Length: 544
Image (cartoon, rainbow, N blue to C red):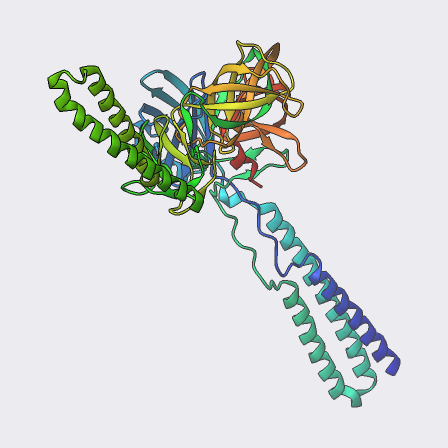
């Protein structure tokens, strides 16, 4: 009896363990979220236009763009042949056209004919939409799960019946253990029931499959899917590539300098103490005119100088007094003929000269030196303070005409006079330059080259560093693209994004060479007649 009971218990334990293992096979307490699915959509292109139709429940959104530039078309007439008949699309907010489409609620494949008329183009674009059937979505997985549950239930039931059979045999042999046998049978049935229930138990139900989520995402092949709605938010723009011949350019370091014919320095010719003119010292950025008094310099006088000046003033005063008396005596004598008119005039001239010399000495002691503006312009530098001692040849102010600025670049080779050049600031501003001349002597083993700025200079400052792109006589062949079209990947490779379809962008590794301040030359990596992103490439590169 004890041997049969032990065998029955072992069989029960084995079946229960197998049932528990099978129940947990493939069991997930926290299932992974399903991948994002995009809304049903269709697209069509022509030489001039690109169209994308997106199903939005019982409505159809239509995005219409220029094929070459990806620029949205805001004003157009769109007629669509639908299963319900011809419908005219209306423009909605954000340059999106929409129509009511209740027939989209029924799964199936729909072939639409879209007639587009704009101010410049007219096209007929066929679009195909396929609406999936949600009832068939995931049915195979459901059937497989049900089959597994049936197998587990059958195994657990067979184990329970086997153990119950052993218990019945044991009861037939020895009735005095009937009570214990009944208790064991009931406990076994409860355990089996729990195992079956646990087999079908789910701790966390998987969320429903999302439908119609248009999210930008990077595809397994490396391309980037960007919905049309997102493209308009990011202002993605493209251009068609074309081969061309361009002059090779070199990059030179440079800085902004004032035009030497439209700038000047205000300096003190002699050392002295600075004092402000009426109205105070001009502030930085103040516009001044040539001849304006900007400051005064009062020369300091030593004690010995003051003593010499006083002695000289006394001598002049004495001479002036003597000559005045002589003139007074000559005037009546001229009338009697005792003194000639010439002698009287000479005495008067001598008296006037002495008075001028006396006035000059007084002026030296009283009147400071006035510092005048040499040219028209604005105060670019200088912070004088009242009472400050200015040494001889000290630069008190620098005056610059902000509309006339130059660029000084350093080149290792002499440039031709007909050089075409441009400069780019650290903020990305491009400046058109005109060659003015180059130096004949080296400066730090390079040749200084001067260019005049011919473009807007409102945001340019003297001393600002720039990069100068100067053309040479060599010709290069390739594709010219804006610098914003090229992005740097994580491994340092230069990339451009090709617009391969309406909502898909493929990265293309390229080799670039500098061309000018705004463009680069694509030497390898892409060919002509490709749509390349020229605005928003950095934003596309951030999509993961």
